[in-house]
Length: 330
Image (cartoon, rainbow, N blue to C red; front, side, top):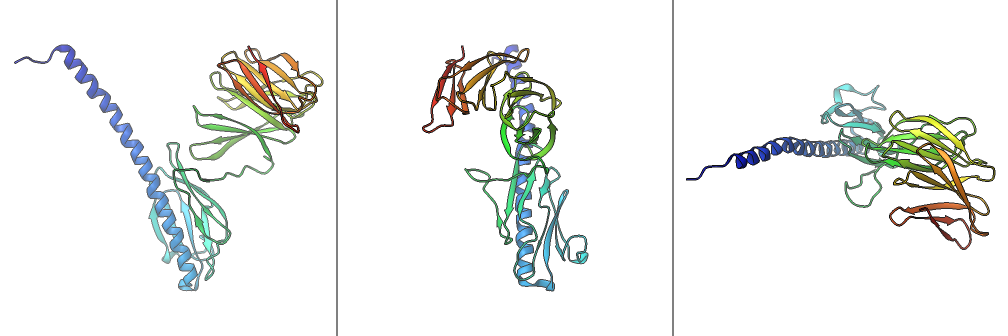
């Protein structure tokens, strides 16, 4: 009888070692998904139960739900603080779940109308979330986890107004939104639990952020202003700080569109001028490296895309009829 060779034993041991690493990770992923589903159903049932009791006039009282860390409480009363504690029903949520948004909801007696409307969000610690939407009548709406549907909404802090530009860091799970304020601000959103985690305010005069590009390889985002002349503000993503800005030449105004050529380290910003211009920025040393003035009638560039493989950028005009101008970027 022929036994196993040393090489065969090494291969088998390697496969077993690989399975030993992969299996726990797969189990953790399944558990996180299961925890989110469990929490979703518990909260959904609690909200439905509270509204049903309120509509039935049970206890001649309003009924509500309070979402706390690791538990949901169905209570009787006008609010959680003044509730009748003896009537509490508590349901434990998985420890990985974080509720936020409308975390205290009270339904009116008989009508079932809720005291708040908006999103009720549940997230876990692994880049996933579910939400409900409560309308003004207290009706609970909840999208499916899959398919093309509205999921949730996030409201920024007062003063963080009119988002006109955005970029996404898919590697680290963040999105950055530029405001059309004076001065401009960039709001950072963590996508795993869909919450605002911070904001930076630019310097005076760096106003109305109308365009943005991101350089993931080097960890920077660049926001174009709607100022005259236009400016490009550089943000380092690792510590979310403004690290510099460049001001374009006179007449290179209102940077309403932008694309980035990550292969060659160049960004191109389209102006909202007549005629339009495309301004070239070299990212390695962050300087204005040139500009191209387009033809008469090719005005007001509000949109842009880039084909890095073939070396062309396309800028769309805000005109009647619209035009698309192709630019050779090689």
